[in-house]
Image 1 (cartoon, one colour):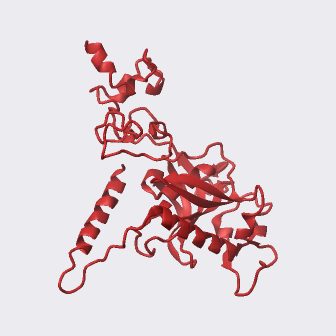
Image 2 (cartoon, rainbow, N blue to C red):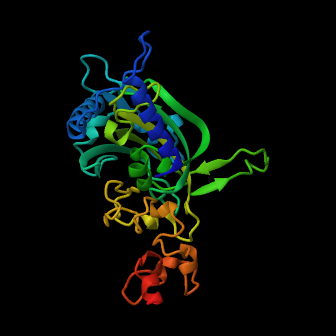
Image 3 (cartoon, rainbow, N blue to C red):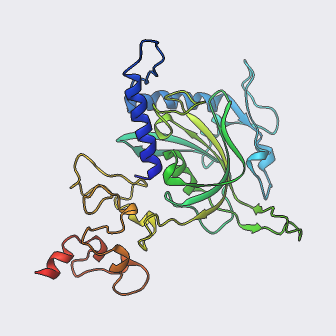
Length: 327
């Protein structure tokens, strides 16, 4: 669990405790009632499908456009009684009925709940790589509610660690590619302006269970589906604990999340090998044998994951390795 997430959960806990102890002046904060995730997902999906069926976007602008961005995108609601979009526009919901269209419904499992997140691809991106779920990304974005009110945005590039964001970002950004090329000379002016060519451009339509669920920040109601427009400009591989293993490789169960079972630290299905409550991607001694993971690269090829012991387990994950050496 990242420090930012820990802080967020602690803040949520404090708010809940404060809500349960309202003072005599009635100024306490009331925490929302905790809802069933499965039932909420059904309601959220209905809301998102309704939004898609009643909104259109300027599709023609993105045809034969070799360097689009979210600045080009306009999403509008159909006027009451209208069932067709103006020329050059496409109703979002209609795309769901077209095979191989640029709007897809992606199934995601989180918290033992089956979610659907909708992804509109306006430009896949021409770069050579896609970010993993645990990488840093450089993006421009705009977050908006179902009434199209904007709750957050960045009009210039900003960097985020995907692990610190809501799950929706981790499920969507790996579907896109980074910029094909980057030019920081601006035609020889060298004025600090960077031009990103042929980068990933899209919109994610996110159910609350892959967003903020019951703990929404200001500007977003609890249990609200939300949307993000985004330009994916660059991605940078993360090694959070600097142990020589890229963080994405420390997702042991391959679910695209870092999860530890605090109720059972011996759980072998989570991402904490030695059961010390520290996820491997933040643990520089993954097997708890007193030898730093980076020092278990015995064949010195720069990748501890390649150093496989006789039992077929990489040394840095082999809890029994030190004990057998000491016998």
